[in-house]
Amino acid sequence: MTDSLVGRLRRLDASAISDACDREGLEGRVSIGPRPLTGPIRIAGRALTVELGPPAGLTSSRHLCAAAVDAGSADDVLVIAHQGRSDCAGWGGNLSRGARVRHVAGTVIDGAMRDLDEAIEIGYPVFASATTPKTARGRTEEKGWGHRITFDGLMVETGDYVVADSTGVVFVPADRMEKILSVAESIAAKEAAMAADIEAGRPVSEVMGADYEAMLR
Image (cartoon, rainbow, N blue to C red; front, side, top):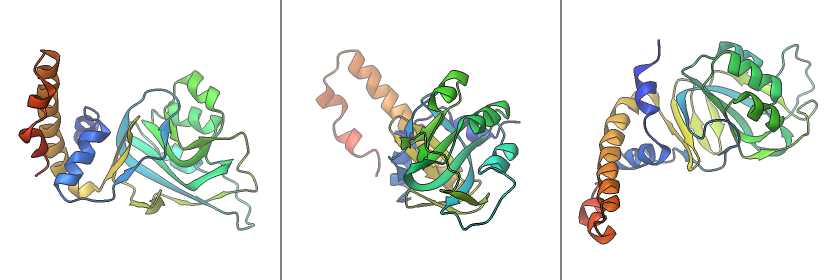
């Protein structure tokens, strides 16, 4: 059964959630590095985290990110801490296929992915800050999953909420999500009314006047 908060979050964009975070004094929750490279241009869900890092010379029988993919569901967004690296991929084609089969909402990577064309072909949403054909083998490894990570300088926990679109990525702590959603829904309704007034021909200077400037107070 879909998390009711996820259902509400999917009806909002990153800007509305960011504005709500500002209004509630929740700073430092936005990343503008990853961009939508495949599939739908907006995804939302609960964060399921993976931490990658420099290889320590240990041999693993499991491919990086595979355990998180297998644990994922339709309410989850895989959030990969890859330290912004572009010298090797932290995500690839078979991982995209596995996540799609699990109906995972999408993947957000602080760093590079590969097999972009394959992800586009199967329609799996991936947000990444770069692409590269270079393999992760010998260049990075999984340090763990399902725990607190640092993503583009932001602290993210598994179970936090995330919305990503062409504007950016916003993370919200689970214990603040209900309030942030309520505020964001109110902001989005006001923005929609303003958009309707502008489309009807009302001057923008009137629509975006004192009321607009006071929206986040």
